[in-house]
Image 1: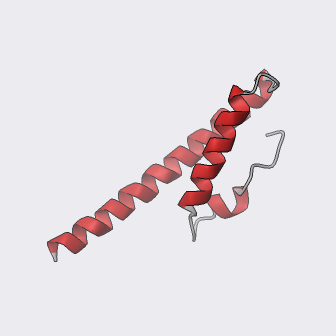
Image 2: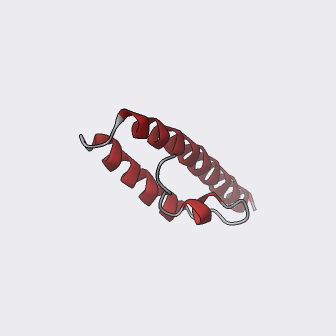
Image 3: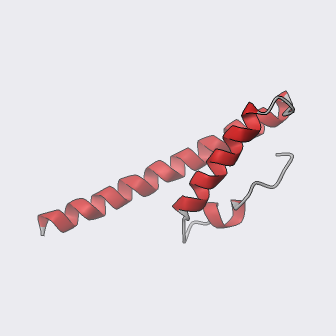
Length: 74
C-alpha cells in the first residue's frame, strides 16, 4: 500500500480492536476512493484495506451481539 493508513496499528491489533477508529478509517478510505485525484493503483489498496476493516467490524459487532444475547438470557 502506498500510504500508511490512519490508525492501522491500533485498529488491526489482535488484543484490542477500536471500532470507532475502524469506522473513521473506512470513511477516510471512501473519501479517498471518491477523490478524482486518486490513482487506480491506490484505489486497489484502499479497497483491500476496506475489506479487512469491514471484516473486523462485522466480527466485532457479531461478538458484541452474542454478549448482549447472553446477558438477556440470564
